Image (cartoon, rainbow, N blue to C red; front, side, top):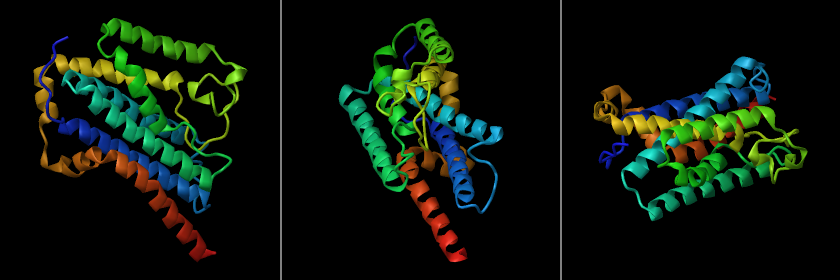
Length: 243
């Protein structure tokens, strides 16, 4: 694999992450409206909404895989990687604690941030494998997810694996099977980016319209942590005032 010098962030990758954040904000705002019965859009049951939620999660995980592989290609050291993983793991713990306080019966025990933190650790030793090996692992994860389900994983301590027969209640669930395959897909996309300097040039361009999206993408963790408490608080206030 050609390893270019990728010492700067790629604005268009950040912009893509910004778009995913906007989609997530729309989903959570709609979820709040349904939860407080302002609307009946079926956010948690309608196939279109479920597909929208899966597309958002998949987008974040693909971008995670791209970022992991690009950072490795740029020569980011162990300390930098561990610091980033630690920040995400801490944020995931905060999400679990906050949701346990608000939704004790359906708190987030393994959501998108939990997955990203664990995926970064699992993917780390895989980043420099041959692309066919990475592809085979991703395909294997999807196949195993379709064929295997075990009852001993039907607890919150093991449901993160993704092979449960009965998933414990939660408001956000992004287990290793099958979602780690999306991270590996991102790693493979990064291989293409690293091998094509022309593509890198497109990704380093920053059109004027992309400024807000790039800013959001570069502050994605803070936005993720803050947006739903703010939206849920506003929905709670609106509900209180209208009763």
